[in-house]
Image (cartoon, rainbow, N blue to C red; front, side):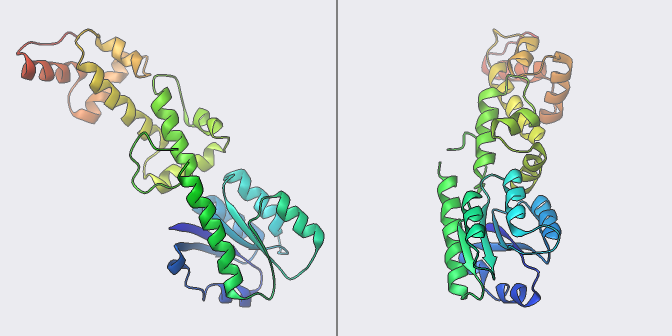
Length: 254
């Protein structure tokens, strides 16, 4: 199910849009705004995949709202509602990548058709970077790309900032997206990947603990041991000893 924000300064339009059974179409309305500023605040806090907005609104008009929304999430799907048949508006909507430009008054079927087109685009996006780490139900391509980035670069000094740059997105938006879709922070995911890799490396008795710490991107071996113990309730040396004692009855080296 995809999240959608609705923005229109006319109460009767907002009420009409909310009579549509969006859940039946795989859409969850995350918020309804009566002006552009309120809509922008909702976009930043709710991280929707779809924006349905009027053009002429107080505070921030619909075109500027779409532009701001794309800065937060380049893949957001936007549909414009307007009571003005203005060619310049239509051109600007095309430039901004809007998937629908609907003149008021409009039939619910026309609006639903545009929303379903947006949903189809999002479905196509979600099928383009297979995940290297299981993320049950995550459909956001940016999150998938960052999981892949972590898998390939966990041994390097990577951060939320470098990950956001990798997908050409704002780090604040990425942080919110992680909390919303994964339920963990970027650092939590990165650390989990590093600890799992450390467990694999500890099974090889030829590596010393400080070497393994460096191999998983943690230069301070003391800090590495602290984090490992927090995750597995034993030190790396104790974990290795456990592995080798079970397998051969011998202890590993620290």
